[in-house]
Image (cartoon, rainbow, N blue to C red; front, side):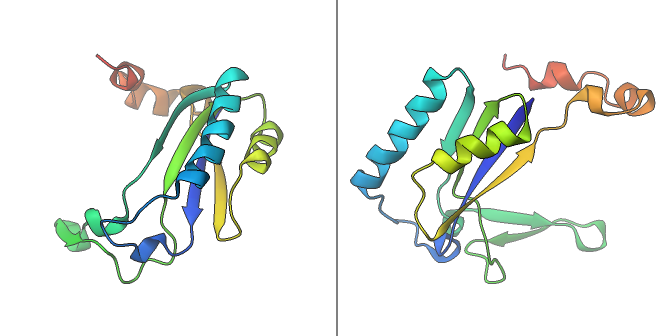
Length: 136
């Protein structure tokens, strides 16, 4: 089963575009990332720039409205993610507990939807989805 572990660092919602990373923290996180890879569970990982460098598109009344970051109403934002392939939620939690996260960070773990999770009519409506997922 694939799980996404989402890093939610408190304070990142208001970080400036030029927010600096701490090399010592990066070194510790790289050890964790390497352990995931060496265990054969890591599928993908990325860090994200702060919301101040992004935009949101909302659809009030069905019409797109673009709001540039930062987003005043945001209480939590994603700072990065890991996509892992493990046997259970318990195993995903065990990996998250090994992360060298600080006291201002939270990891949310969410199972990725698989086509097999859905009834036949939904799988039929999503025909071609798995082909779209493949990188060309």
